[in-house]
Length: 386
Image 1 (tube, rainbow, N blue to C red):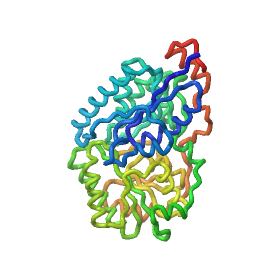
Image 2: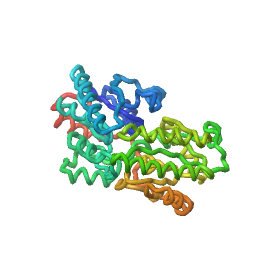
Image 3: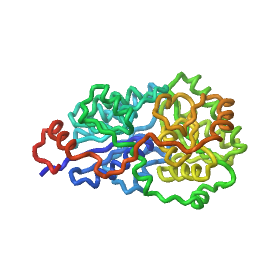
Image 4: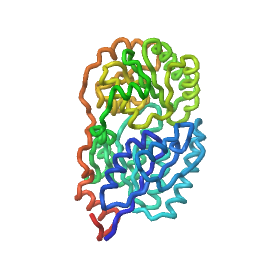
C-alpha cells in the first residue's frame, strides 16, 4: 500500500505561521510522508533567523535552500526569483514527491509552484482567493499559484467564491478557516509573565507595530514610511511601542533604516526582529485583555489574528486595501496627522466585534471523499492507504 510523499515549502515568518498548523495536521495523518523545505528570510540573521522558531516547534527541516537576500529593488527580486527557481528545479529533480503544499502569495512560493507544476507534481494551495489590491505584488502572484494548483483550501467564504469564479472545480475547493487560529485555543497566556518578558508598564498602553513595504515608486514609498514613523515619534510620548522587522519585499532596507533611526532618538522603544508566533500572539492577548493599546501597521496579522484577542488594529495605507476585515480594524492613510487623530478618536471607542474568519476545529482537515477523488484524478493511483 502506497503512502503519499508530501513536501511543504516556506520562505518567511508569516507564511510559516500559516503553514505550521497544516504541518501538525498532516504529520498525524498516516496517509502521508511529510518533508519540510525552507528558504528566504528563515535563513537570514538580518531578519531574525526565523529558522530557530521552526526548530523550537520540533519541526524537522528536510532541506534548506540558501540564496543571498538581495531583494531591495524590484529588478533584484527578479534575479532572486530566477536563482531560487533554478535551485528548486535541481532539488525536485533529485526527489520523488507525490504532492506539494504551498501557502499564500509570496514570489518565492510562486517559484516553487512553477517548478512543481512543470514537473507535474499536484499542488495543494492554502489561502488562495484573497484580495489585497494594495500596491504589493500579492494578488497577481496569489491568483497565479491558484491556477497552477489542484486542491484549494481557503480561509473564508469570500475567497472560496472567488476561486470558484476563476473556474476551479467545486469539489477541489474547501473553506477550512484561518489556520493560525487552530492552535490558539491551546495557549494559556499569563499577563504577568508577558509583562515581565517584555518589561511592560501595565499602566501605559502598548502599540505592537509591523510595517511591510508597498511596491510603489521609491519616492512615494519613502514619503509614506516617513509619515508613519513621524507618527510613532508623536505617539511614543503616551504609548509603549514594540516594533518588529518588515518582510524582504523591495523597499525593506529603508524601513529598517527608519526603525534603527527611531530607536536612536527614542531608546525606550523596543525592537524585536522576529517575535515568533507565540510571543506575537501573547502581546495581542495582553493588549486585548487590558483594553489598553492596539496593533498598528499594514500586516495581515493585524486583520486576521488581532480580532481573536479583542485587540483593535490601526491599518495604515493601501497594502491590505480590499482584504476581508473585521470591525476591529480602522483604516487610515499614511499621514502623520490623520494617524494621530484616528488613534485619539476611533481607536479609543473600540468594542468587541465578530470574527469573520472561521477557526479550524477538526483534525479531519480533508474529508476522505475529497482525498480519494483527488488521488484518483491527479495521481491515478489505485492503491493507496486513503
